Length: 256
Ligand SMILES: [Zn+2]
Image (cartoon, rainbow, N blue to C red):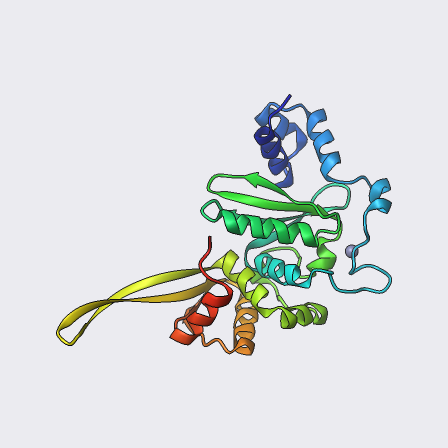
């Protein structure tokens, strides 16, 4: 009756906190249909018994089983993700990924599906980017950095169990941060050697984030990995030394 893009657009608007009435008016989708879609995405409380329990709020809290996926997703979340309340005491975790990098969108969706206790994610197309979205009551258990306001206006510190995972999978964490708030760029320069003008390229990595805490998590992890970095400007960290860029190329590489 309604095509997939209409459905996704309507759900994305609802996820932004809009009322069913206004979304219905804007998209032409009936409120009953929107409600039915939400029910399918958001398990009702009485169905929660069938959902595997979250590892963090279990009687004996443990670590997510796929720690590598968690470390990557944590990097994505701290860089550019957001958690917002949905209905029925659940939350949306949303990661925005530029259309230009389909491989990154797939990697993000795979990690989000692996970490979501209900093992689900979906994609919402917007202008120029795709939001990879997962719905769960447990996102704040899994990402306790969730809180009101912008990340750069509040203290961001990892809990000991998160630090344990980042220490075990540091490159996944770095890759997540670069995939959300970083880039690899190539500068060119020429030099005259033996009377001949030669062209050289200087690849480097940048990571830009307004939160000093998030930048420190990035640079602390680079320090542990032996990757040299420099503060390029107020919000920007540069990795430019040849051997440091080689390490980043081996483990992170350009976005794709
Ligand atoms: Zn939980």
